[in-house]
Amino acid sequence: MRPDPRHGVLLPRLWWHVLVTCLLVAATSVVAQDLADLCGCARDGTLKGFNAGDPATYPAGTTGCAAACQSGAIVLPMPADGVLRFSNFSAQGAFTISFKPNSTNTPLTLLVSGDVVLRAPSCCGTLVVAGHAGDAATPARGVGAGGIGGPGAFRGGRGHSQPLGVGGLTPGGNGEGPGGGWGATTNVEALGGTFTGTPELQPLLGGSGGGGGSGFGFEPSCLGGGGGGGGGAILIKANGRIALQNFQVVADGGPGGQPADRSCSQGGAGGSGGAIRLVARSFSGMGAARLTAKGGEPAHRGGVATAGRIRLESVDNSSATTFATEPSASRVVVKQ
Image 1 (cartoon, rainbow, N blue to C red):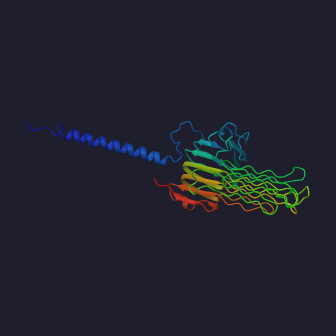
Image 2 (cartoon, rainbow, N blue to C red; image 1 turned 45 degrees about the vertical axis):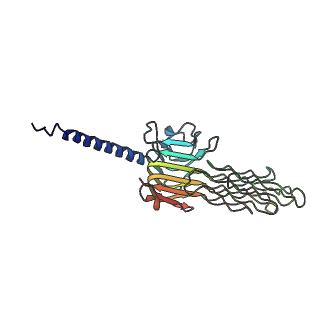
């Protein structure tokens, strides 16, 4: 009796083919899902959206609008690890959004499972992690303090007063950080901060502080200004798009503080620019849509700081042309 092909060797082979096909489809689906999850947060069902104009969406500790609004200054506190997670992140209006550093001053990371949309009616709304200016020196207050760095960045050097005797050197404080600028002496200007991060911006690192100024005369008003703080470091990873319209992301270094008397003292140098790294499925920009990580301006006789770095990574090719940047950005297409 001839075996029925439906029950012999053919049937196990058929089931084996179906099983392998199903496994391949499942594996392909999982791999595609993982590749699409740029933020690593797509499976987190606890994420909530952030809307700058709706205080009901603010994380605990945020300061800003008390009721629904279309403009204002919003300050979000950074958690201990520096990572904020949202399902979407939006600002529809003339907002300035900044971040309160945590106790260890880590860089800022925003992980968003959906879109990041920042739109202002005219130029320009701002998302800012910039360094602070060095304090100006005054006879009443004394020498200028160094400016605080942005998130993940470093402070500027403190200014110094007049020389201690003829030929004496009274150097201003050095800027903090791996590229901190040297403080001024009686005959040498303060040096600006130098950005030392890698082109890939991994690890993420902010800018270094500028050197503090110094007096070179003997009058009580011969007081140096403080160095500017380094620009902060920000990473935004979004599984959707990052869209800017009349909005800017700013990681500039802080300017140096002015001396009390320009005839016998010098100001602080600027802090270096910081780091901006954006990763998304796509980018779009309308109106003034720009990213800056410029070195801070020097004060009187202060040295020039370097710019930081900007890196744009997209799944499509929009990273190649979207957004005006200063300095020029590294533009990368993410392979999937």
